[in-house]
Each structure stands twice: as C-alpha cells, then as structure tokens.
Image (cartoon, rainbow, N blue to C red; front, side):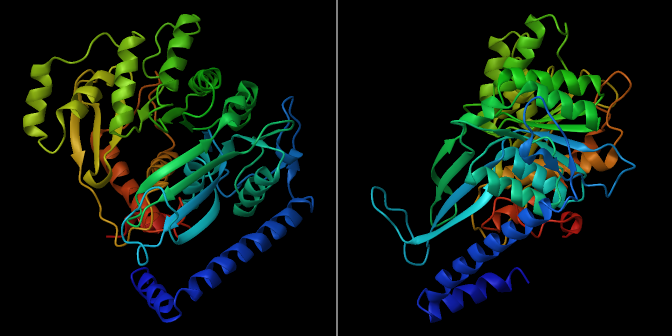
Length: 433
C-alpha cells in the first residue's frame, strides 16, 4: 500500500547507502525513454486523425478520447510545459542551507498548469482536450509524446517554430517538500493564437472550459466569449500572483470593446489561493468591474461565524462575488473557503469553510492545486448540465461543497507523489475515506 512503499524505499536506501536511489532514478528515466519511443511509433501508425490549421497544429495529428461520445467534452486552455524538479534529501540535509549545493534528486516530467489540470481530469475519466502552445524542440516533442501515450485529445496543441522555446518550470523543494525557489520560462504561452482556441470551442462544443492564466489577455478574452456562445461553464485557475489578474483584464477588454455590456458571470468559478484572491479583488476594483468592497461591518459579522477564515479572505471573496458566481479559495493546510449564491436569493452570498484533508506523506506541494482544479473540472464534466438557460451557474451550495471536498483528495494524492499529478489518481480515489 501507499503507506508501506515509502517506508520500504527509505529502508532500502539506508541499507544500500543511497545506491538504490540512483538505480530507481535510472529506472524511471529509462521507462520514460521507452514510453516516449513507443508513443512516437504509435503516433506514426496512422491511427490518429489528421487535422489542418491556419495556425500549425502539433504534428498535424491528434488523439480524441472517444470513451464518452454521448457527452460534451471538457476543454482546457493554458500551459503545457516540462517540469524539472529538485528535491533536497531530508535524510542527508534535514534543513535547507542557502547559497550552497545540497544532496537530493532531480526529476523531469511533463507539467504546466493547464496540462496538469487536463491530466488530472483525464485520469478521473473526463473526455479532455488540451489547447496549448509548444515549440518544435526536444521538450515540445516530449510533451506531445506523453500526451499521445495518455490518450488525451491533442488536436488543439499549437506547434511553433523559430526561436520559440517550450515552457519550462524549474523548481527546488526543501527537505519538508515545500517550495524554496522556482524559475518559470513561460514566454511561449503568450503566443497561443486566439484562432486556435476559437476553432477548438467550435469543433468540440465543450460543456466545461478550464482556463489557466498563462495565455495572453486577448487569448483569454477569446476563450471567454467563445465559451459563452457555446453555453459552457468556465472555471478559471489564476496560476500565480503575477498572472492572476489576466482574466480580469480580459473581462475589462471585452467590456471596453463593446463585445458584451455585462461581463458578470462570463467566468462561473475561480480557484485562487489567498494571495491571488487579494490581487484579483484589488484589480476588480481598479478596473471598475465591481463597484465597491464590502462594508467592514459585514465582513466582521461573517468572521464571527466563520472564525477559521481570515477577515481579509472574507473581504476579498465578497468583493469578487458580484463578478464570479462561485469563488473557491485554496488555503493549503487550512482547507478551502467557498462563496456562492443562496438558492433562495442569487444576490445573497453564502460563505463557508471546507475542512482540510491531511496527507500521509509529504513529497512535494507542486501541482496540488492543479490536481484539485482538475478534479473539480472532472466532476463538473460528469454533471454536464451546469448552467441555466440564461447562463447562470446551476449548482447549489451543497453541490459545490461536495465537489470541492472530493477534489481535495486529488490534492492530497499530489502531495504524496513526486509528480505534480499522481499517476494513481482515478475516480475511486475521490471516494476513499
């Protein structure tokens, strides 16, 4: 079981004085190399339907997951990248020492927020297509090969030549698994063509569109307007403090260009952490997307009941509530906070706290939030009918809480794995006690 495996690996590493760790890493690398070769061979055997784009599609071929042809699919728009993750060895170096090298292990895997979200939803049984930009380089080939091997719909990947570089996320995690530092080379994400997204929505007619904050403001605006025409539920993952306001700027662009007078409800669910929530609330006020912050008396009144939530979180959630029908705040070890409309009065917000689930083992925290969002998307995809005829979110507070509570299990599995998305993730894991 998952409790026994870490214990056994630790004991073997101790008895072999670390030699087993190098052997295991070599085995993982060899498995990845062989899998990539097999996937590349399968992709050239003619089993994938070609599709032509005005903006070049990755390899000209793609795989469509046809397991659930009776349902509208899920589309994820965002970043596909290669993750290079360094993990400090907690046995040899129990505390992080800055400005020097430390013993540990380095893992390479396919990642990126959008890809992680799509992968998690795919493993949970959703029919998922990913729209992202990758370069015609070795890292881009690795991304495409792995997604082909997974059986994910890759027809809407955009392949870029020239000086473009496939996105790379390089992270260092300390002995306790927490992030120490990271460098993100994500320039290519801003090159994802709006036309690529428009064609994906037009062909797929998705019931749910998941967005991360990596594409350009214009690309996000295109995704929002296309999703609105398709009557698709939109879930926005803010990605980082630096990028989280991109969706708000996209909404402002749509409003200023007279494409739509009222942009409230174009995004149905947002999933920030506390810092991203703060930046988004400030931007919403600055861009005049909401009129005002809630009165301090209202915040204090709710804080007396929801005493486990910081007043600042409550204030920022209420600030964004007129713009987004459901705000799900990821609070890490403290669980999650949710605000959504009252079933009896859509203008009245209901705030509640979802208690946390504790992992049995902490390997790293990279990807936990992405896995949680992927699990939210997979559950929404399963429901299919998510919006009313006038495009309002058709989920009761109890439904949203159940979705978020189950999605936390995906986050826990991620924390217990060296990969951003645990390969053991499946529908049954969300129901385990």
